[in-house]
Amino acid sequence: MTELSLAYLFQQQQLLVDENFQLPRVERLASDLSLNTGDQVIARDLQEHEPIPEGFQLVPIRQLLPLWNTQQFEHASRAIQLLEWRRNHKFCSHCGHETEVHPTEYAMVCPACRYHQYPRVQPCVITVITRGDNEILLAKNARNKSNMYGLIAGFVEVGETLEEAVRRETEEEVGLKLKNIQYLASQPWPFPSNLMLAFKAEYAAGEIVLQEDEISEAQFFKFDELPEIPFKGSIAYAMIMHVTQGHPVADDTREWL
Ligand SMILES: [Zn+2]
Image (tube, rainbow, N blue to C red; front, side, top):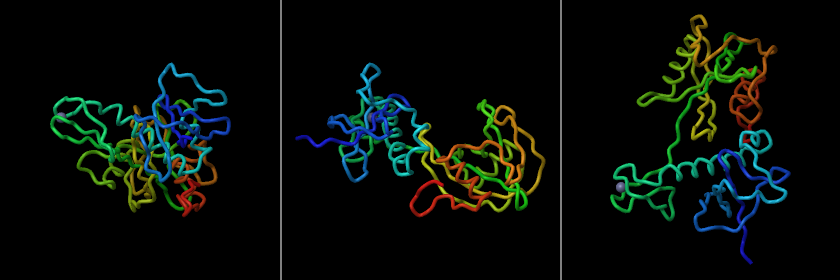
């Protein structure tokens, strides 16, 4: 009897799960991407026309975040990013020849010029800013039409340190200067291929001036008067709970609190 593999089956950003949001087991195909997780775990893109098996459903991966533990989410995150990378590197970016999948590494190899293309992550800083001992800065993203307030975040630019990225993003988006910038934790975030690097910092100077195409509203909130904040499972939620409630950002069991 064939051993079945635990499978991350994607259609765009949706994942196939059963009624209890658990992964299916399937027979492995040669084209499947195998994940380095110790046991038989594979990832595969489902074709648009492929029928959904009885008892299963396609669920946006963001919706699974509050239901899953950190490890499940990190595996799904790795699967989605590797599939996306493989889809986007079918040709050599150096000479244009069709690439081949490396047999043992995560690399797409060009048989003509031997150029190896590896998956890349985009470092992204996210900062929780406090003022005094009971105020936190929360901001509304201009593209998000909900009432949710989040944290200041943005991509690290080429040649920049993480701390410089924290300072620059904060000045650009809300016009404030920071002090005491400290690293907290990180979270892989597969939308599309980010590594979120969490920092905390204290307000140092300045008045709030919004970068209006990015931020529609920002203000300091008292710890006990928070507005709607990002959902549990996101690093932003853990960071806000850390500064307002004293919870650890990630505990030893690696559960996001
Ligand atoms: Zn090449």
